[in-house]
Image (cartoon, rainbow, N blue to C red; front, top):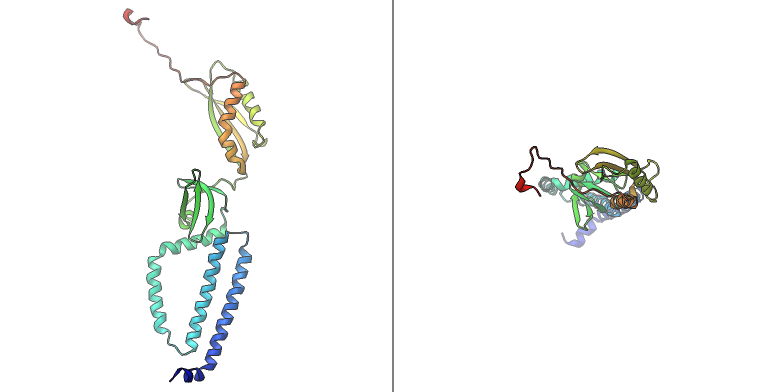
Length: 269
């Protein structure tokens, strides 16, 4: 049968195929827009784009299969071959599938957003991209690190930005001859002068232990999550400045050497 004869014999099926394809296109566009509206401002744009593409292609592939079947094509063999190929690809791509599922779960759970500072494993940095398979973090020293979503979802991590308030603490030593009350007073006063140090919970300074070279003071101060790095990077400087202004020196390491017997005459100074 020539092409013209085949077209004349199957024109109704061709109209049906065109109808199926057009309906599939409208359905895919409608669902894609609905998904984009539902996920807008909730997840990163690249993630939304990946989900939209997956939905669009899935609907179009399903419509193509229905259209081929309506034209009389035997798609049983193709389905069997496709199923076998899909099984092989699925076994070979288990990691990618796991990352995809983890990416979808992270999308709905939203434990972090773009710009958040997170700590996972030995990586600490800002989230710059949330993909459907992986998440990209830029570390403090500017290195871009790509982490599979399954690793993020299946392991614990810290979100520093999500915390409303955060604690920063350091230890500092003062000489045994210095006044503890005076040191506590000047350090606390200096911390309260900083705009990013919270008044509640208030800064706390207290003597914690007696060390070899002096008295160890523990300094604790709270700040908002978004200003954590301000306090983290300046706390030691603020403490040192407060002690300097009060004339309190941080002692050098000291050792007292005691001899059980007098030194021989030739070793005495």
